[in-house]
Image (cartoon, rainbow, N blue to C red; front, side, top):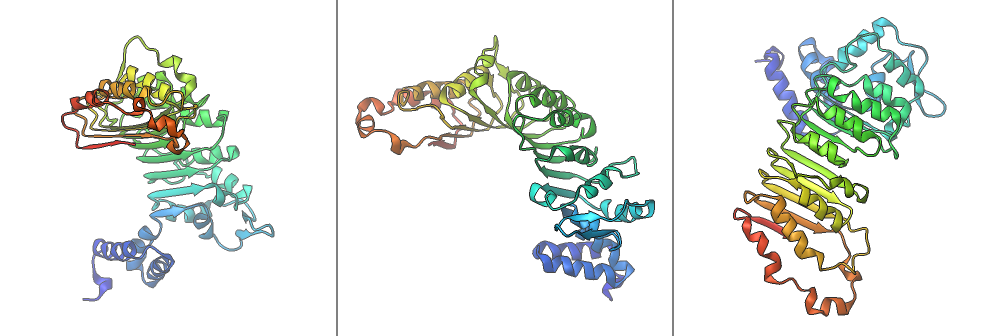
Length: 365
């Protein structure tokens, strides 16, 4: 049987299998050639070729050469605005995009005309109507309106890195609208700090399908909001010195559904304070990383027993995996400090860990 007589589903499987084994430029060239071979091959080949796209260059490259070109400064630009028929041409490809990634170095190579044209798309629907995965790693505030054009209700995985300190107003405004525009997000990676925390908190309330959240420093109000999310199973967040006092709560914040947690703290005092006021009764895997920006030597190792007690109170006996990493150069300690018997941990210091009867993976670095 000639391959061109096979059902489209079979062709799609064959092309996908070949592409997944050869993720390189040659594989893309092969798919492009298949798309031009015959009409039977065209649709499945284009579906695979446009499934995962990096940057805006592929979108612009499908336009006629009389419209898109590279100027004398090396920027990808447009000679004139796009007409309706040309938007239809772009839509023929963009509706196939499942995953879209944007990085700053790529945006540095496009002219503002490209961004303005994409922000002026005539369709009321998102620019990528079937997008599921969006990764946006950029620092340009003037391109946030363009990012807004990519936010769609179909998105389930999103990674945002704005790299702006302090956060810009446009960033906060965008975060505040995230829940309404992308309510189906299941996995979200987004650094949140300063003025963006309130906007981030507002957005989280609408993300009822959120399963995994990796974010930056959080305040107690945002942490409390996270406890109400019914689907949240994995949480990675940070704590800084400035919100130590804010963690002094009347009652602990309890994450009753969380299965995995990863906490990064600025110092031992910060993590101790957090662990006293947050509980993870259903957690199976816990990771704690302490950067210890403070001068550690006067406090080491006296805080370690207190830290172990805090860990035993924060996590339940259901815990199976516990990794605690102290980001401190122990080579910096004086020799007489290490030789001092009081620097050694006694058995009583680690006794609280015995409450974790299901623990099979323990690292105390």
